[in-house]
Image (cartoon, rainbow, N blue to C red; front, side):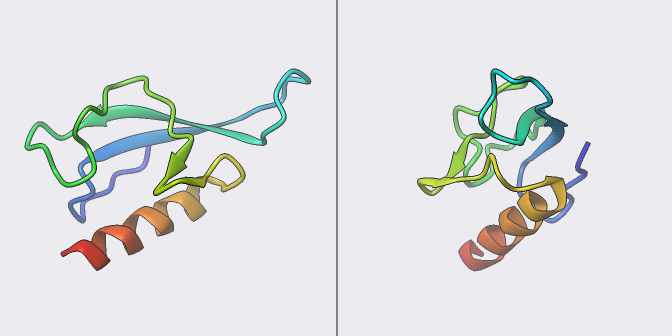
Length: 78
C-alpha cells in the first residue's frame, strides 16, 4: 500500500492486470480513506478503483507514477 502521509487522504495498492480481458496494465484499488474528508476524497471508499484523476486516465501509470501525480496535485491545492 502507498502510505501517503502528505495529506492526500487515502492509501491504495496497485495490481498488474495480467488478464487477457483487460486492456490496461494496472488497477489501482483504494485500501483506506482518511476519515477527515481531505480534498479529493469525498465519496471515496475502500475497494474503489482509481480510473482517472481530473478526467485523466491513470490506468497506464504504475504505482510510483500515480503516487507522484497525487502528491503534485495535493501540493498544488494547498
